[in-house]
Length: 246
Image (tube, rainbow, N blue to C red; front, side, top):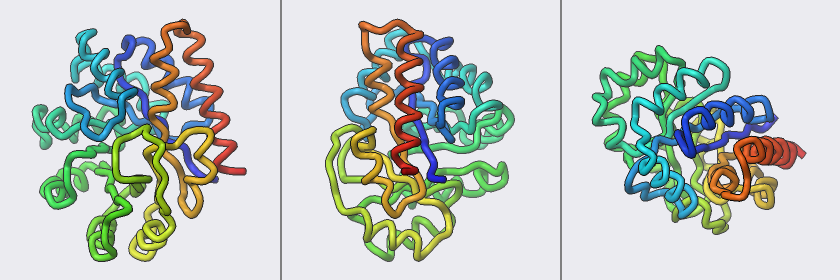
């Protein structure tokens, strides 16, 4: 069974909605939840996620609010925090990682923390049984892929193209996926540009997909109330899960 990871922006449009949506997704086929930490300059994210992040910040969402959402969600749904390094660094990584473990978070996804710099935090992640998700891009060489994935945990994030989330670009991922699997038994999940139209193709050779912009697009729809947004996101998760396993 191939896995589905869903990203949602924490605190948009409000904390209670984030909790309700996260729990609904967990009941609708999502295997792992990415709780996005709103950030002012989300360089790896496309316009939809960037907009949701900025809106959450305008509403006053802070890191403590993300933790509050996490406490309600993580005991019931496998949960990772996705955010930019500055958000975590300001909390003091040596204190933050054990705290996240205690509330049930299983790892972090930090797209702007290069592998060479992430190594400095390996001990605190490992000693707390937390995953710092490794990224591989289609442009990475065989030697670099080997270096990145040799100590990877939970899953390897295969970036579907060089760019930002949600742009829908396409590249041949098979050489990179084959290379990753030569050097690790850690599952490979494909992210960036995955939606219900592309999921079946993107998951070829991989073990799962990561979907963000497609969910956030629904969250941003002003013509839908909270109940309708949760219903549409839940329906999307079921479609995606069927697509990647058909």
